[in-house]
Structure formats: structure tokens, C-alpha cells
Length: 150
Ligand SMILES: Nc1nc2c([nH]c(=O)n2[C@H]2C[C@H](O)[C@@H](COP(=O)(O)OP(=O)(O)OP(=O)(O)O)O2)c(=O)[nH]1
Image (tube, rainbow, N blue to C red; front, side):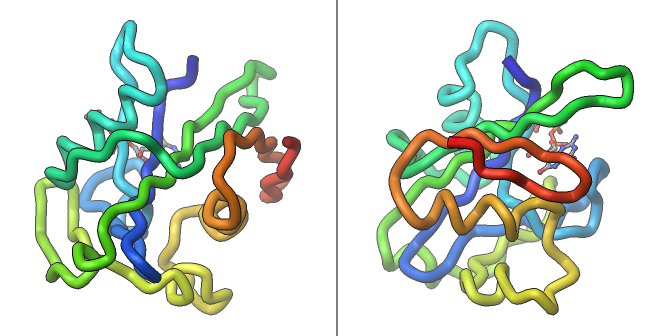
């Protein structure tokens, strides 16, 4: 089990993004998420974090993945990534400032634009895979590249 999850909530052609108020990765746009609790499955941790940070009660994910990498002391670390879908009308809701940062529905094209320097690392590499097809994916991160393994 790895510690963190990051969750993307899609409504039509937009995704709910958080401009992070706090470290780590302070100031950048990322999905919502946080730490899994002891004894909690990765799926339950993701669903709980989505509720705590957005108030949305999601249940079944559309797709998910785990990204693993080698740490400096040659251990394995990783991050769980989730994509949930919600009703198309929800993505029209306005910006909200929360304790965690600013929540806003961003167009997928804006998130994926190569000129967008404000998005968390790796997102533009793994998010297209999660969006393309329902599934349960495995990625490996090395030297700045997220490799889609299966
Ligand atoms: N620590 C860390 N977190 C990352 C990286 N990349 C990335 O997407 N994340 C995500 C995972 C989490 O969604 C978020 C960091 O968690 P957080 O700061 O919001 O959570 P927290 O420790 O406050 O835990 P919680 O109270 O919300 O449970 O950033 C990274 O390189 N390092």
C-alpha cells in the first residue's frame, strides 16, 4: 500500500482541479486527494478524500491507476490516481475557495495544453490514459517519464 491518492472528477469536458494552498506541490493545479488512512483500501481512501475536499459523494471510479517509482534509497514508492465521473451539469458550478486551495472546473484541453506550466508533474502523462478507457492501470515513473506498463 502506498500513502497518497490523487483524484480527478470529470463532468462533461471539464475536470475539478485544486490550486493547492499548502505544500507539497504548493501553488500548482492538481486533482484533490490526500493520504490513505491505516487499514483503509486505496479505493475507500480516494472516495473519502473526494468527499472531504469537495463534498461530492462518488462511488464507482471510471478508471484508476498506480504510479510507482524508485526512491533515493532504492525503495519503491507510489501514488494512486483515480478518475470519477459526475453529472454533466455539475461542471458548471462556480469557483470555490476551500482550506485546501481554490477548486475550479477546468477544461480538459486547458489541463493538457503543453504551454500550461501550472499543472502538477506527471498529470499530462497519465490523465489521458485514465480518460481514454475504463480500466485499472499500472505506470512506472522514471527520469521524468511516466511509462504505461499495463
Ligand atoms: N507528497 C506528494 N504528493 C503528491 C505528489 N504528486 C501528487 O500528485 N501528490 C498529491 C497526492 C495528494 O493528493 C496530495 C498531497 O496530499 P495533501 O498534502 O493534500 O494531503 P495531506 O498530507 O494534507 O493529507 P490529508 O490530510 O488530506 O489526508 O498531492 C508528490 O510528488 N508528492
